[in-house]
Length: 215
Image (tube, rainbow, N blue to C red; front, top):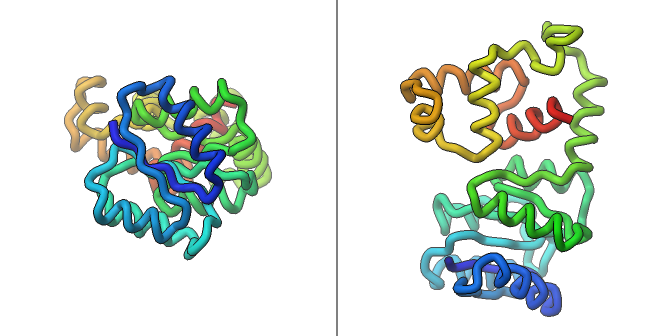
């Protein structure tokens, strides 16, 4: 496994590298101290298995910078590890394609669990963000969703809830189809229906909503 760590604090990079070595002892680590260095490594450093990077590092252009990294490393998970726990930063990162957001204040146990989830194809979202999402959801109009016992299900069918559980696990449509014994076309129909029921536009937003439902 080849991992790119982008952070302007040397001590944090060293600490994160040592933590990652406990998960993947044979991993190759490449480090960058500025956003420009992150881009340079993405251009010339070959393919990475995951990119871990901070927000607001030197040369940081804003959340569009995440899109730049993704364009240089197509299909590679880009995970934000940041001191900021502001909901706007978390939402901004996820809405711009980040496959996880891990606060630097997380305990070693939480950090390792979050990294394991990301490495297995899932999406990690801080519990605080889920709490805020739940509060916002409760304060917003339900747009015709069911009340009472079915309210937590957002009007989803049992099959759609199964598909949603697979989305939370980071599975592709092909994997979901195989696991549930469906065609990929049917999975796509379910995914579209889930997005509509939850009032979201993409998988990341669906995962946040699903976690809020479960809390």
